[in-house]
Figure 1 (cartoon, rainbow, N blue to C red):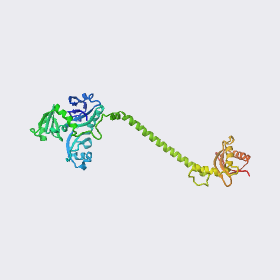
Figure 2: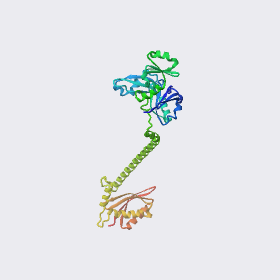
Figure 3: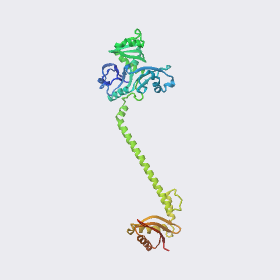
Figure 4: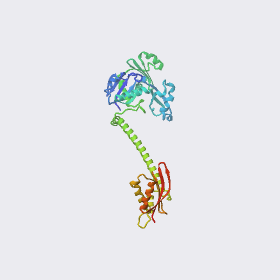
Length: 384
């Protein structure tokens, strides 16, 4: 718990110039006073408890059963809606659990946006606010009391009923609240009362306005390190997310390409071996088919003995304008058929002559002419 208390005696949530408000700084039993901005350097990198004037807040209490209290933040705006001047969504609700056996919950309400602005002010000045409290609650043990401070007087009837008024309007305000002068203690803001603020905060007997979206700040080494490295960490995390998304997209593309290549390989296998069933393990099926095509006693494959001279001729420079389209091997007849296109029929005839000169029987089947050239089917067999 911090041993430094900053008491802002004037309303600070309803003004634009936060740094100009009068404050008391209580630290290690010593008390200083001045404008809030004057204490910025003293509070740099230090933990502090901030005390607001009751003029910045509305104090009340609600009676709830245990089931309702579990959803306190949800039910408070509806319970207090008729007694608040502003819309519930613009307000900040804070509460404290009551003592055992009591069902009345102390509640503090203030405008949310100004509190966020004050929170940001201390963050900008690197001051670690551990809690924000209300003076009337911290001095509740003196109720009923009238506590005067310069031109402002605090009328304290109880921990949940207090009002800060100009001293000139003290009498009519007392009558409205129904406070008896004889019963109320007449006090002046003094060193004793200011030191009592710290003692009450230590006893944790009051509502802390910092919670949820506006948590108490910490000056621990871990928190300081996180604050320093937070932007870099978020930037690095965003890069990791982007890289992960790109890798996932690239993986999907590779998987799609692999699937397409697999489908094309299966289609090629079925084209080369139309009588075979659809392959399960494509590479093994290819190897089995090639071993099965070995048919002669010399160990050479009938398929390869036909395909080899055809491939050599097609790769020759004389036939570089020829384009084979489809090969089909008939195992029963030991024949190889393929379709081929050429600019002129004479080139197909030349290919046939070259193959025949190597001991092949070559016949030209169907042929057709088009604007781009000639297409014909050749059937190649070993000469008998």
